[in-house]
Length: 365
Image (cartoon, rainbow, N blue to C red; front, side, top):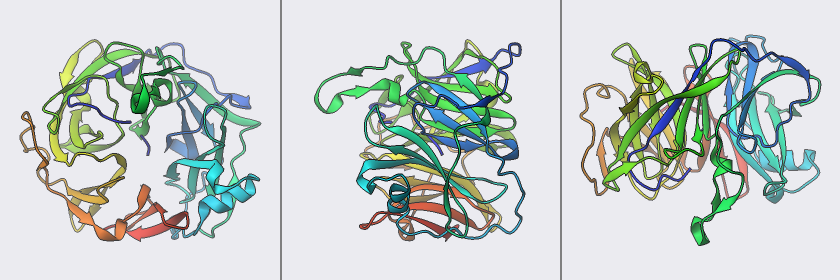
C-alpha cells in the first residue's frame, strides 16, 4: 500500500470513472510489466500491480487463494539480501517498492526492481510465514490490464534537485474497495494529480472528478501533487478515502461526491508535520475504537484515533507545525517503511535497519 512529493497545499485530484461497456478480457501469457510498484489484493488472490512506467495496472491471478484462518507471524531478517542472492545480484542493486499481505493466505508479496533506473527489471516475490521466498511467475499466468489515460510524458523535466520524471509517478498507490480498484497518480493534464476508480473485472477508465485539498503548512491550494498513500474508511456510515500527502496533510474525501465532470474539495483534517513523507497506512480496530497507523520517513510510525474525524473542522489556514487530529508516535515502529494488516491483532512491517531490510510482524498498538 500502496501509494510523491507534495510541494504545496491543496490538491486537485481526478477520479476516473468506468464505462460499463467494453470490458477488458482476461488473457493467459506473459504480462508486459515494465515496472513493479504499488500492490493491492482483490478477490480470490488476485494481485493488482501498479506499473508506473507503462501507466497501467495489471490484475494477476496468483492461485494463492486458499483461506487460512490461522495466519502466522512472518519474520525474516535481511529479506533484501536474500532476494538479491536469489536474483544473482547485491542488495544495493535492488529496490523493494511495495508490500502487500494476501488477506486469504497471510503470505507477503513484495514488488522489486532488479537494477536501478529505467532499465530495472520488475520482479514479484512471495514470502510465506515459514520464511520461504519464491518468485511469483510472470509467464503463462492469467491476467488483465487496464491502461491509465493521459499519463505524463516519459521524460525528465526540471533542473537540479527538482529534476524528475513524472511518468514514474503516474501510479502512486492502489486500494481495492467494494469491487473497485482506486488508483492515485499523475497525468499530463493541467490539474495533474488524479484519482481513478476501476471496476473489476476491468473496464475502460474515463475522466471524472477533480478534488481540491488545502495544505496548511504551506498555506495554499495544490493542484499538481499526488497522494503518497491512502486507505478507505467509513465516516458516519458513508465510505470515504483518507489520503496523505508529503509534509503531511491528511484529507477525508467522500466517495459519493466523486462524480464525473465535477470539482469538489476534500477536507484537510490533520497537519502531521512538514519535512516528512508518508510511506504507508492502514486502518484497524482495537478496544472498540478505530485508528489509522501511518509510516513516515521522518516522523516515525503514527497512531491516529478516528473517533472525531467526522466532526473535526477542515483546516483552512496556514499551520506552522501540527493541527487537527491528534496522533501518538509509536517508538517500537522506528524504521518501518511499509506495513499491511495480517489479522485483527497484528501487522506485517518492512523495517529498515543498519544491516538491511527485515520483515517483522508486530502487534497493532
